[in-house]
Image 1 (cartoon, rainbow, N blue to C red):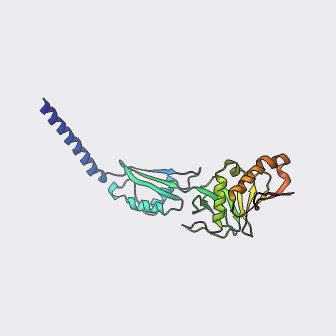
Image 2: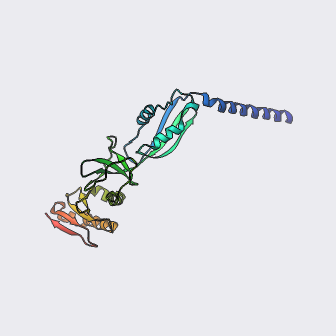
Image 3: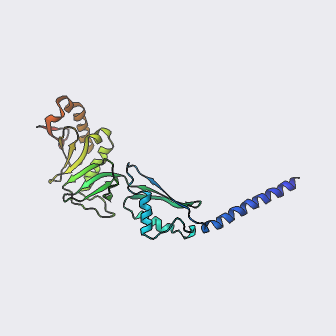
Length: 250
């Protein structure tokens, strides 16, 4: 009886193994049945959708659905996506059964940049420039003024944009400051200014030296000082000097 059970177990194992091997061998000859695109993003907007990916593949003459799995060029698909300016990382491109799954993470747009001559683009949290798209519907902070860097694929923030990016990241980390300041302006003296959403005060910020301290001083003024006297009484606040804010009445 024990021998019979042992033989039966061995036969069962061999049968399962044979089925698995045959399935693996036959799988590449099966047809791709579906394309599924998984997108990860920290923005509300999706700058590169499944429909966009399908159009990209068609334009590059890369076939997927209806083609034998072994003939689908996964390497070319990966390279195509890596070259897209909105894509930060390709997580994987592989088959799950007969379904082709493409999984990627998009860059996180932080700023909507307007140059001094009317060009516009987005800047991500890592300082990478991304082309303007109507798909971006997030309420991004604006960077404008004396900005001369134009969009180029693969470009990163230059010395004009880097201080703006540093300041924008600090503001973005604080819900109160983020709601208070939605625009960073670079004036003709290469100094940064903040435009308040309440009261329309212009804040002369200067450079990013002691930026955290300046922002904390502004928080105190907007939460404790200005509300008592009225937001509309001040046209300008100057925080360029250490531990001091100079207020200019209208």
